[in-house]
Length: 152
Length: 483
Image (cartoon, rainbow over all chains, first blue to last red):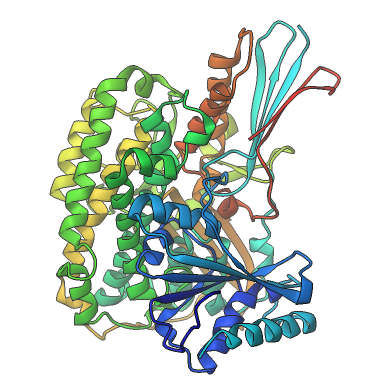
């Protein structure tokens, strides 16, 4: 992430993706909860179960978009922050649309290309419970710390 | 020629996971074809042991696409558990629930038409697979894609304004609704300063109907005959006058020729319907007891609703219904691909109904909840976007759910979709030298017309790529294609 963020999140949208009733799948939402507690502008924090085609319109109004999601991948340090490029590859359903396809749709329909990043946080447990696993909590802490270093 | 088995897995551009198996004998003839629903549903069991008032919240998790439909069907059932029948709900609560429901149907139909169905219509069934998606639609017709996004957004915003969230919001409470509408919220949808207003939604709905009419004029042979077959049709209709009805009415079924098979109070459904099971699918097969498993199944959804209703009670949609009926000589329309057309007429109807309600001051009333004498059984039936949705709950004297039965729209359409798959497979795959990807897409087009929500009908698990496998009689792999 090249630019420093302010807590006002000017022209920046942070989208937490997941489901807090499925344990670590709620990491994206917990990330936003933590930012809210820190005083970040809640108008620019968006909670989503899944991304849908109309999110292409939503992100077209912002200069920067950050997607935060739980990951099943084994990640170095338990999290990663990576730039995101648009992709034209489409999935077999629209039940959920990956962030790179939302970016592509935004470019195609609205001729806008917000800078985009993905924060992946490694999760471990996915049962029907509103409770993060211990390891996931730790990874969330590390991801937040790293993210906040980029903020003023 | 060896016997072949073709598997389409998963079916694309539908909501959820399913697969198709087609068996071809040594003479090149299709001997059988099945639509398998490979997901497992556990909601009916899962919900047992919970207090009744949790049901409208819990059942929303059945689906991220139509949670509102499940919320409202459960709410109607739970109203009865607290002794409140639909006619005894306060006018404000009924109107708020209806507005929520019309917003849901509007956004769901927009999603299906623009994102799932339109690639087939715009680019044709022989278009390469990589072109059959929304980005290709957007590249070919940017304005159409933009309108599709904004129409879906409008419906989603209605849901958010009433339920608090676009997905899995909560508005209904036993015997009513939690909160009223505000003047500010009403202005948001009427003044057009922040989003295109309700009049624009009506105008765009008419434009999209013009598109499908013009498409039909150019492709009438295909659209009239593809996957068309006679069937029964089932939906709710208005209790007083038989008009198109989404929220509360009588259950009416007619046969392929228009003869009435059923016209009952919705809460009597369990005396008239039974569900069969097959070993190759997690999805059940509902049918009318009186007519048996073979002849008693129904189609549900937009095409069925336009067949069973006497008229549409809003002027613009009714004018379009009359034109639509002329396509089947004012008789029952059994042409599967006309479901897309019917869906768009329903979008226009919902837009007209939303306008009526947005202009109704009763939405601002704070008379929201009614009470009655508790009962131990509640049945809620509504017309979800995909068709008739049934929720039934039984409780003990402490209000704990002891039994739950859900018949979702896609379940009603199970037999119809299987019939469509068999018919298309027989027509396009018999005696062909090579089975091509566009041929297999035609199988999916037939299923897609029903807009099945397979996760809703069952429960989603895992992810699968699209794999088509052709096997010989002994199950040996001859060919494999991955999308």
